[in-house]
Amino acid sequence: MDFDQELETNLHILNTARGMVATAITAPKAKGINNIQTKILIGQDIAPIIEEMEKLSLEKALPFFKRDAENLKLTPVLVLIGTKISYRGIPNCGFCGNADCADNKAKGGLCSYDITDLGIAIGQATAFALNNHVDHRVFFTAGKAAINLKILEECKLIYAIPLSVYGKNIYYDRG
Image (tube, rainbow, N blue to C red; front, top):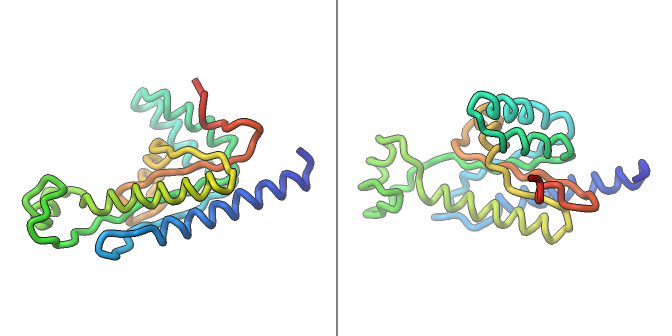
């Protein structure tokens, strides 16, 4: 790929990431409360996440963290999507498995609505990437590294979506 083609491809990937972020933020939310947080990392800004994934791979004996880190070394743009945790105060809900929001909060639990909203936001964002013909995959491994590094400071749950354009999707058939 020559310089001009690579530049155009990377601009397309970056514009797709921007659209993914907008899509995640505007995705439907329970009670209309937006706790979704996003961040786009480009080029060398991804390096701390790679280092943290490699560290976790060694410390926790999790080889798939290393495998995913290797993928990120070939990734020009990484989208992070996370959620803050709130307690909506819905009477008699118990969807989280606790008696109510006060009980859930006292136990340090996670609100099921925030988790559901995050899933919807990720689904919308990945659909945007798919519709823009940009290869991607949802990585909880890179999300865990982002949580450890406090990249989205207020988020207790984060997933990462690496983006690339090659002749074959590098995030599948990895062994």
